[in-house]
Length: 204
Image 1: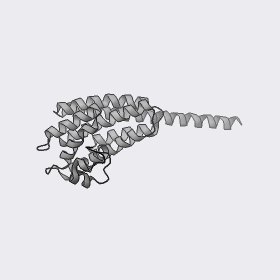
Image 2: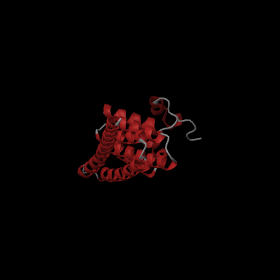
Image 3: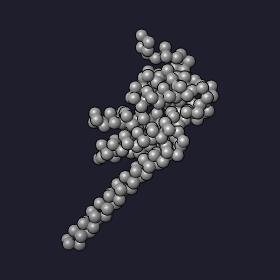
Image 4: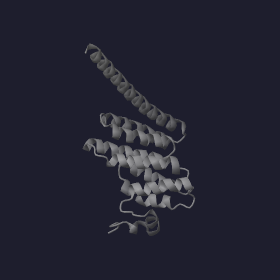
């Protein structure tokens, strides 16, 4: 009996150690991601991207702390930031969207939307800031997302998505941006072809 008790105790200690180790690794990985975003912004030579990176890391840190105990939501957040730093804007936009739609507390939902908006603005700035003839629209999108008023960015999102100079990779990001922020669009091609009038109720 004593041997069984000792074995069980050792097993419990091992499990506790592994769990704690895994949590420490996850925390370290998240901290590393925030550090990468900060460094990328500072070394980009783009003051807007640097500013967005600073805001994103601050809000993401607050959200991650708020999500303590919700491993699923924390995983979505970390996945979004990992995709962002890996240059996969499409995946990052999708993860930000899922996080904003997750079942969270009102305060967590507010933070998640803020993180998603700033993260999306970061993606827009990084992918389209040098797009020929789109600087004004890019600035409008970034500013609108930063302020938490994505609806104001819809005309500019349309303009960027229709830009003839888009590379295939940029087209994918632009399509994801439309899917994420333009409500009522069943087909992106219809929206781009029909303009704002194709949106249900828009302009009425």
